[in-house]
Each structure stands twice: as C-alpha cells, then as structure tokens.
Length: 562
Image 1 (cartoon, rainbow, N blue to C red):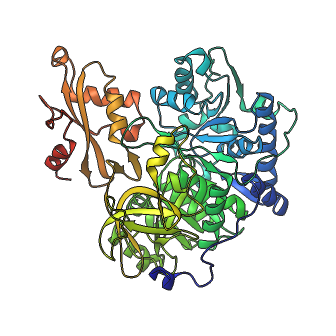
Image 2: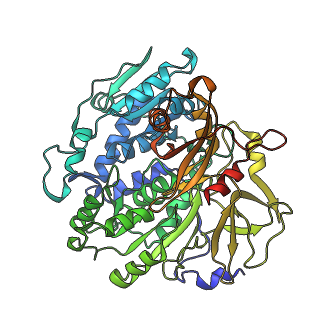
Image 3: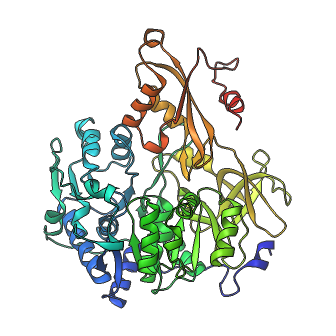
C-alpha cells in the first residue's frame, strides 16, 4: 500500500468502473435528466441541456452531409463559447474525432493541424477563419480543407446585454463584428445558421469506449507537434473521476475561463460538467473584473484556473466589491501557486487551492491534491486508478523517497500513443512490473506521505503562465525569417508569467543593418501564437557550439540565470 492512501478521501474508491458508453452518451443522458437546466451561460444568454443536445444533433447531421464518416478527424478551432461545446459534441455524435486547435495559432502553424490528421472539415469562429483559409489555400490540392463551418460570437448571445453579464467594453468590436464570409479555395464554407439548418440523416451512433475520440496535439523537444490518440475511455475516466474527486453534482456552477481547446478545460471542466449536468458560465478569454462579476452574479461554486488569474483578480481595485462566498472549490495547474496567495485564499475565504498535474498525454490529471488535505506548491497524489512512480531516467530503477527522478504513470487516462508516430510512441513508454508506463519527461520527487513535487524538467521546455513553449518549435518558425542565420530559444525570468521566451539570434551578414530586435519580435507576432513570441530578442555574433557543432543552449540558459 503506497503512502498516499493515508490521505485518500475516505468517501472515494481508489479506482472506478467506467461506463461502457461513448462520451456522447453523457450529454444525451444529462439532457434527458435535466432538459430545462442551464447547460451554458454566455454573456447572460442561457442554453439549456435540451437546447445543447438539439443543436449538437443538428450540426452532426450537417457533418454527415459534408461527408464526415466514422473515425474522420475534424478540426475545431475556437475560443470558449457555446459553439465550441456544440461543435465538440456534434463531431462525437457524427462518430468522428475532435482535433482541438489552439486559436492563437497563425496560418503557418495551422497547416500542420490540417495535413497531419488528414482533416477535410474545420469548424471555427469568423475572427479566426482567415488564418485557417490562408493555411488551407497554401497547401497542395489534395491536402486542403474541403469544408468549413464558420460562426460569429454574436450567434450565441444578445448583443444588447447589459449589467454584470455584459462583456467588457474593450471586447465589443471583437465580439460583435460581423465578418464577411471567407472563401475557401475549391472548398465550401457554411455559416452557423446554414449548418444548423442543413438537415439530413443523423447517423447511427456506432462508437464506443475503444474508439478514437480526441486528437489533441502536443509539442516536444524536436519536430512538429504530435497528435495524442485518446479513445472515449481515457477521456471518460477523467470526466467521471474528476467529478467524484471534486464533489461534482448537477448543482455545480462552473466558471469556464481555462481554454476548452486545452486538455484541462476540455476534460476536467467541459466533459466533467456535461456528465454531471452542471452549469458552465463561459468566458472567451481572461478579464479579471468580468470574472469577479460573473462569480458574484452567477454564484459560481467551482473555478479551475491558472494561478496568474487568481493573482490578477486579487489585484483588481474592485476586488473588495466581489462576492466570492459561493465558491466551494478553487484549483488548477500549469504553474505553481505562490504560497502567499494560497495562504491568503485560506485565511480570507477558507478556500484551499487544490493544485493538480497532468499532460495532454494523460487527459489532464494524472495527479491531484486531495481537496481535504492539499499541500501547497505540490502536484498532489496519483489520481484515481493511477500508478505513478519516480525512476532514474537511465537505469529505470525506482528512486527512494525524497530523491529526484523522472515521473512516470500508468492508468486508464493515459493515451494510446502518438498519431502516425510509432517511433515516438515506442520511446514514450516503458514496461515495469508488467505495466505500460508513460514517461512524462518531468523530474520530480515523492515525499514520505506519497505526494509528488516537480523539481526540474528532463525535456527542454518553457512554462509561461501555464502555456508550454517548446524551443525547437519556435526556432523552426524563426528560421523562416530571411534575416535569421541562427536562433536559440531560452527562458528568461518573468515576475508575472514565471518564465518568458527569449531569442538569441545571429543575423545573416546581408541583413545586419536592415532589421532590429523589435522588428524580429513584430515578425514573430505575425507568424506564431502570441504565447510563443519572444518577449526579448538579443543579437549576437555567434552562438556557443559543441565540438560536434551543436548549439549549446544550456550555456546560454545558464548565462541568463535560469
């Protein structure tokens, strides 16, 4: 018996029996049980569970009419809004596979999310559609999108909403602008109204626990992002387990500001809430005062977040006017919660900040702190049904208590492998005691109570406010700039984000007097997701290299003081 079971919530089993059904069944069941209950609230507009089911079925009919068959991959690129939830479940109802894509990606990055999963259909919002169109049109004819469904944010809420439910004034143009319908080269574009009115046959639901459901992408130390193959069962496990872990019920009111294209927002919030029949209050992006108003107005009970959001909300000059008394659960991951802030939450609101840990490969939580016995700045204990260990990365022997090694995990939430990448899949797993363990690439230790703590990274990665930035991916994008001869990405300390991205650049001799550091930053903003963009660019005459000619990034990192 592992040490952490002493702190296991007494009301919960150590592992669970999964429903032998698909993720779609969770929505169908909640809609049957709670047809008139609010499923989604978006700037004051309420969509009931019956309404959510109906719209998802109608969009599934449309997808069937566009030729989407069982197992086909469909790109879903949106910020948080009701249409994202509708589209997500519509894809599942069409027996297809959701490819969630970060809406911050630019056209050059988006090409990979079309070609690698062989996607022919994409669903997006009108503000993002031009980037997807540019990405698709630049591809070879056989690789392009054949169909796109485009929606406006204003399709889902009353533009005249007033009071605490209203969006910030600064968002008005972004949310309310009606963009011209894009034109897809040799493809068809449907607007949201057309898609929901398309009609047609609803296919028989033919997917089950073992079928592929979600293909989220994760980057790494080399190459392009890799698709993580999650069947219905791995997502179902964490949806069921997360609900039980957090005392989930249909009475939960959940603030959803963590992006639902990301594995945490998608699984720990969206799928968990839909299965429970809970109400989700949606925010498309972060605004501290909107969050404060919505928690107060909608009596939010559960809020999963990134620690910087809590810090920002508490720093608002209006913070004292917000009523947080309805909150019974607050937690998150992606970055450590500063101890002083966690202590203030406890002393001022009697709230224990519950940190967790997981990866795209583990459908979000592989570890979580017990809500009744959390430790601060701690990953928590292995999640329900999970065997997690710390091993020596070289000998693969389990490390003693307190000694650092690589965190590995085995459990029903672990993905099947990387899409089209048997080599990467083989490298990511090892067998110990007859079990298949996933190698996280994170270095950690286990204390005497069985709680896990992150100590370092085996992989070269930057964590900026919970967003993972992989230097190799940023470097590959930067090499497309005509002035850049060489580039090395390292992290630089950031008092708010924890870490930020820095680029050390060698310019081509022909361009040395033609570009500036700020010019490089501006170019990066045009060609990559904003969280990947270097905040600092430093020009140097040469990069340090090993005898074999490899760039010695660690030397630059040490000089930076990280």
